[in-house]
Amino acid sequence: MTSSIAARLAPLLLLLSFACHAAAPAAALPAASSSAPTAVDAMDRALSKRVEARLASQPQLADVEASVINRVAMLHGEAVSKEDIEMAGAIAAQTTGVARVENRIELSTKLSDRFEVATQAVAEKLVRLVAAIPLLVIALAIVLLAAWIGRSLSRRMRWMARVHSNNPYMEALLRRTVQGVITLIGILVALDLLGASSLVGAVLGSAGVIGLVLGFAFKDIAENYIAGILLSLRRPFAPGDHVVVDRVHEGKVVALTSRTTLLMTLDGNQVALPNALVFRSVVLNYTENPKRRFDFIVPLDPSASVGDALKLGLDRLRGIGGVLEDPKPNALIVEYLHDQLKAQFLGWVDQRENSVPRVRSEAMRAVKSALDKGGVRRAGTPAPAVHSSTPTTEHAMHVDTSKDKEIDEQLAEAQRKTEDVNLLDDKAPATPE
Image 1 (spheres, helix red, strand yellow):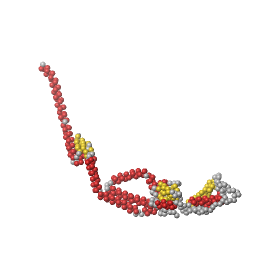
Image 2: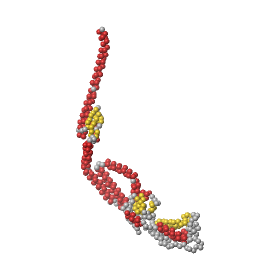
Image 3: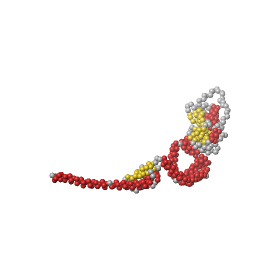
Image 4: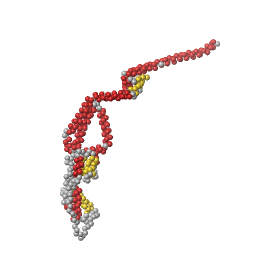
């Protein structure tokens, strides 16, 4: 019986021995693996202490804490400025053994800290300003010297004399340009001395953008201003000239300002025309050539003698005061219709001495009288009675054909008011005669 029990226990003992042999390596494995985390933790703790020691050397990082896990440094706490936060990250990153930094430092929201930062910034700027006072004085002296040189040079340039004799406005414009350019050079030198060269580029770039915006916004004003300068150079008219602009605006020139051309109409009203309009338009200047031609049409009856009509009209036209002998008057037939012949009479007037409308009016009256006396029928007039003995009489009258002077006094007064802004150089403005 004992042998049977032993036979039954033998397999159990064999299984137990195998289980003991398998458990021995498994128990040894955890012991070996547990030693690795222990070494890593020790290294991280050493790195943490090293990072905190380096951070503690900076007083402004006193509220910053550091911890290292798997060679990753994590920074926590508060700092007064962004520069301090960046400096803490740089210190941690430069620590030997740290692979990466997670900077979780936040800006301090304490009122005392924010006030301290502002005070330090103001103090630093004041210190820099005091240190830069000698440079500021030298820079200011350079700007003032450049302004003085520009003003002196613009006054002593010999070629200005030629410009002045033709256009005083352009003289002043060129003087201001020369002075402005030299002053600008002085400002650029002063800024470079102060180390503000980047500021110069920024200012010039901003000025370009602002100039572009203003150019679009004030396009009409700029256009009129430039047109005024060009008109003052070209000088298509002078103060007192009788002109017609764009075939619509007629009058005598009062002045040319920087933006408008002032005209005095023949009925005494002042008109301001934009310089851009005058520059683009056709300008008819009656005063440029003192001799001006006039003409008028006389309709003749088809049965009338054309030769007699033209001869009588020309003879009478030559005797009118104000009609020039050179060029001599002329007459011709310009149109032949079934019910009339159109005769055109032409004559010339010296505008400096006589009025063209007055001379033309007197010429029409005189030619009509000469044709009536010569028995030349005009178109549309009834035939004279056969037995009529009543001659056509015309009352003698004195006709003034001298130059128009009605608006001269108004013109002179308007020119006196615009004397300081007139771009046209006229030493003898129109005055009433």
